[in-house]
Length: 93
Image (cartoon, rainbow, N blue to C red; front, side):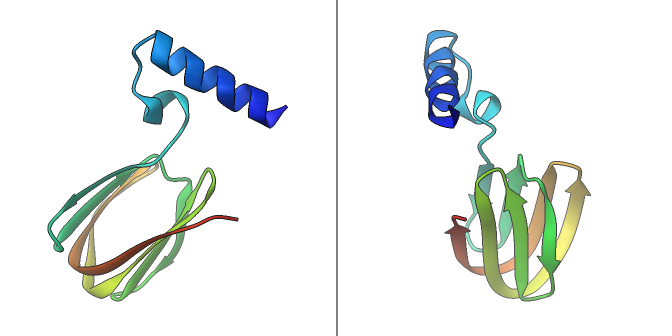
């Protein structure tokens, strides 16, 4: 049943010219070099330190590793992180 719903959302997205991240609840990640990352459509903050950020996503988690992290903005579904970003991982669960 989940697969059918996913296929329907994908089809609607293409037919209605809607961005897939909106209809499919996918994360939108914008990264500028290694110094700045902006994440939309997350489901909550799991871990934060000056070396690691872990966010809950609809499907799994997003893990960001680096150093000198500073949360510049944190809204219910958006985060702006600055620092030296070394790795970005998607963890499927």
